Image (cartoon, rainbow, N blue to C red; front, top):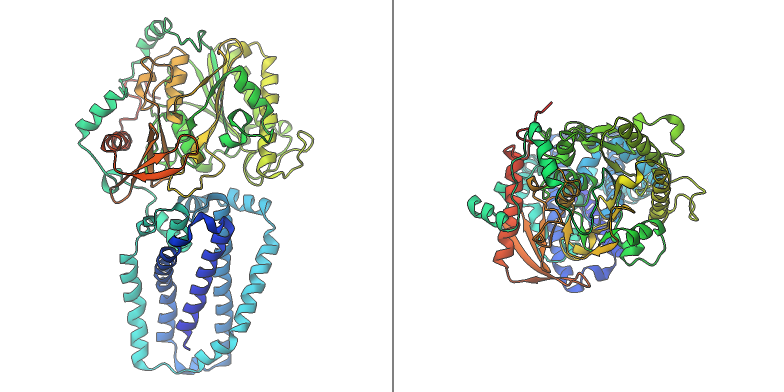
Length: 637
């Protein structure tokens, strides 16, 4: 057996075992037995595609290596060392895939590409979450054992002479085979089985990683279904999306006075300040007010009873930047990177930009390092005052890990920001982003009855404790009863399921709490994170709520009950228990979503809902690309 063949068999065996291991980890019932022939066939195809790229340097080496060098003892030692290191690298990738799968139930994707940019946080998170030394030692020992087991086969391969004809064949294969296979292979071929777990298992992590790197930006018009823009504009107007031009600063006082005559029966009084708390990874399933029975969120449950709870509220995506994009800019999730991380994202018509030009002190307060995911740059460029952990007084930090300070320290500093703004006589809008409910799930001991690290449940319970402590501290402030507190999640803890966009995985809590301003109740219709900015502007009685793609939930007539869910490439539109999914390759699919179980079943194409979905996503993508999401008419700084 020659070296390329031996190497190929080892590579394919590791890829196959990785696939089997991920399947066992998830549970074999996640992908029905009937789908496994397709999983294995597609999996072999992607494994072979990656193998051709990995074999290319081996083929070239074999083509160029002189026979006299091949027979030397030094070469035998170096070849064995290379072989062991190659096996180590493959096993390391397999283990990395396992940890990624545990978190996201998918092969490497955009998130993995992004993580390479923020190595400090990611490596620190891994070190605090896993026994890295033992894992690496185990991988090294396994790689060495495999290499020693195969050493006789490796020595036999070295003993085989390579003819001139074979050398030429190796050289041609090194160039032609990877070029041919990688031209034909496409990551889009993964999504044809119909079961999300099966589709992901059929992939290859190395292949999907580089595919995600190439598709870091997805142009909507190039990859997705489109309709005539005039028809799209007409559809959006029929859905209440007016996107009226914003007024100049000189017009705002008059507009605010006019708006003050309007009110919602749910919020008959106007708040002077808004404190919006976006909780890291807080799925609705963890919150008692949303049906959880674990007792992890007594404070949020109380605020839900005493305030307005949104029963069917959905995140737009699976990452913090998507939640920040939606809750600041009120736009559907355009494909590819979130707008928070894109160039030319300054002076957009965010809620912060709009309020700042109407005399509000607007702030973004984050418990971590705000350079992560471009948060500081984005919010600073859109007229928020940015305060991250680098600006927190050292004595205020009682605990911190790689992702950020403990939530209680974050909230203490948020209180200082509000106090300072109110002292200046300004109305205040502050957006607070937490970090404690994130792996490695560490927090100060003595706050709750679950010791740190307490896993997801401990982190949820600690964050709830910190929120309760925050509100009680705020209750002592003179501005408390003039303030609307908004509690929601940036995204869910995990979005995994048998469908491409499992709707249940996007359901998050939203609670509006203000003891003297909000009438207790439950808002039942489906709503989206993009509806929050216009809703808050409506509540504050200021100009700008008609500029967003989202709509105020307090508008009359009532806005359509719909939500947007996405995973960077697949764009979902949920309305009337119908889910439309737009995918690259101009693919449009329609699914029926059971309102109780959230089970998703394919249905015949609903052209009306499909066109509505296209109208939203196409127009939002073009609006950003053409600069139409900027804040026109404002005196920009």
